[in-house]
Image (tube, rainbow, N blue to C red; front, side, top):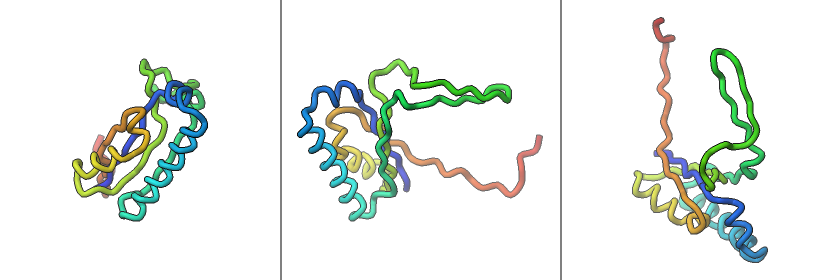
Length: 125
């Protein structure tokens, strides 16, 4: 089953308190863990995200598109990356998420992927 591990952390706190050597070690550990997951057949895709300030929020209401800069969530932890994994079950996904190096600095949200069912016909009005 597919699970997404959403990596949340306060990027300003994490990266301001780590030395350059610690940041480099975190990068190396993260890429190494991705390689381990790929070797075990659990990794589908891993990707870090740019800082939250680069985000754009898009909404469509009454046919109008609005796009606003940056996240406006009332939280210090922001989405910093995601890892799409294949796991036997939720417990296996939690085990894998616990190994993500940034779990020591933030929060990993594990969520099963919803498979949208295919329909042959459009819904009746």
